Image (tube, rainbow, N blue to C red; front, side):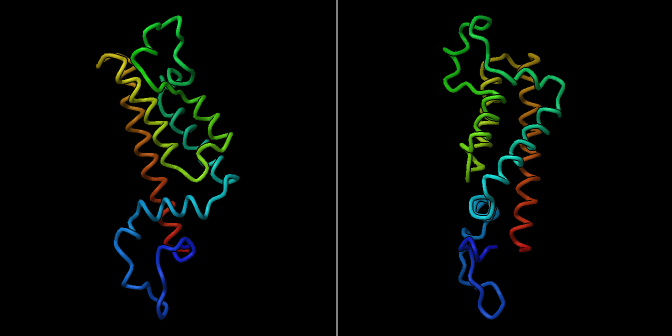
Length: 155
């Protein structure tokens, strides 16, 4: 797989030692594997599964499911410049808007929680839930990337 995505060359059955360290960094391996080896047909259910695991991991995750109601929180859209919620992320997944860019997906998920912690006071249930869910997403993201890197380097 690494050869397929252009990260290494093989000389005599071994990885070429002229490969730069940056080319074979875990992040680069993951990005290339995700972009080159996965198709949207496979990406869509994977991203949906990650988001669903996150949503099921916390009793207050429903707070981030829908856009903030303008009539209930009138100043929210004055404070938060890029509002986003889980439903909007799922819509983007279904429309293949993340295509070969896992980083854009991860950024949007993290933006949900950044917005919540920016708008809501520390110690509030929304702020605390956002912080906990953000930590959980970081765990899910890390383990998922590790699995994909292992798959890429074993192929």
